[in-house]
Length: 221
Image (cartoon, rainbow, N blue to C red; front, side, top):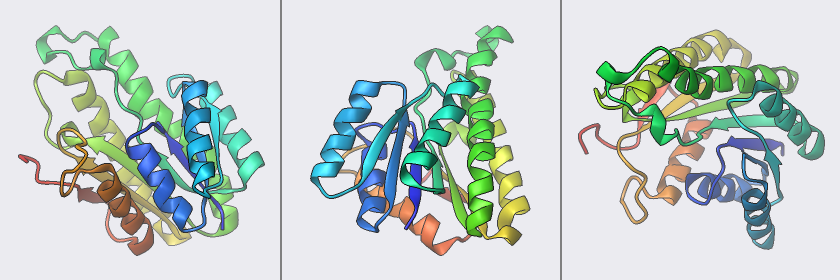
């Protein structure tokens, strides 16, 4: 078995996905900024029998993100599954009429440059394997823009376009690209948006390899 890299790994969705794929035999590379939290999560997973390691990186820093993914592949093995799911900063969510071009730098670095860097770093390994899965996780503004969340609305739309282009371009190589849109918040105990339920959904997207865009819940739900 090979490795899943979870970019934006934390105690909610990232932790649940690590457990879900870990149960299937995948080693887990946890990528986020906070080294102490990553080490604590890796220790929790190890206690449950999941091989996991933390790799510190800022998705807005291409060099650090690329280096973290290289380090993960060297330590754990070729990255077969990439999940890009960091949580956007609150300051990305400004009303559209108060959003300047400078306000869009962060969102674009976060939701466009970061995914491009990550994909380019793992793609050679996936091609060597002859298989791979790339999972983009976005909020509802990826599909329905919100006037008070201009930064994420614009940047998520661009990330969605990039993912869709990859889906079409890589299918013939055995590399599946999918997007999971999660409207609203991730809610523990929710029938469709509990972290463990979402992790099952992402596992199914990896396993069934069908279509690009999928919804965790109704857009108005």
